Image (cartoon, rainbow, N blue to C red; front, side):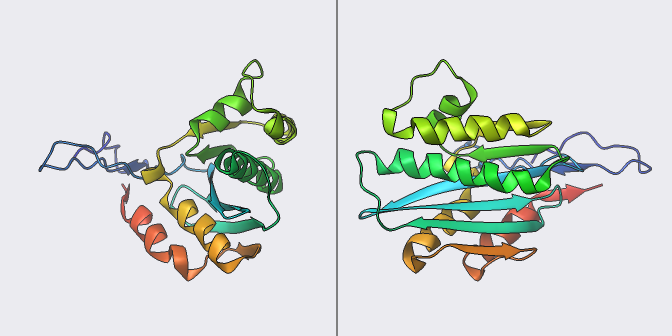
Amino acid sequence: MAVGPIMPHKHRAQFFIDLTLSTNGAHTIKWHPPDRGKLKINVDGATGSKIIAAGVVVRDSEGSVLACYTFFDSNWEGVNAAQEAESQAFLKGLEVAQNFQGRSITIEGDSKEVVSYISNPTTTCPWRLRSIIEDCRTLLKRLDNSSLQFVRREGNCVTHALAKTAISNRSCNVWMNSYPSCIAESVIRDKSFIVSF
């Protein structure tokens, strides 16, 4: 187990524990909290038959959930549902971020392609996604001290479960300072890896 440097006790810092599995030497990928005073918004898309959905979760440096959102579209028709669902997830995450103006925010999702489409204007994206990606770029420019980043699916479990719940419940929902039971285990697990000094 590796932990970041220990600070003198008069300074409070948080570190994420990086566990190494001794059986095969592989690293476990977990959610990393934002720095103190900052927020992290995780997003994920999900698909079903003619359905796309998204989950959005806002958390602080202690892993506390400030808000959760689900988006559901039951009339989707198109070619690449997964890319559109992931793009919609980032759009919903950026819309939610507007409610936290003045805070430094990282928006994180598990679609490397969509992160690239939004952050790099020279990247060509599929025509069906262009308006969504342009909206994402516009919203991102409105946010001070904010960034996008890619995270592997294993580090995005909470929103993955939330997006899947939107598919099964076939609904859009909002939770403020709380979260649904379907993500409780993942939220608690993510919080358990945050160590305060």
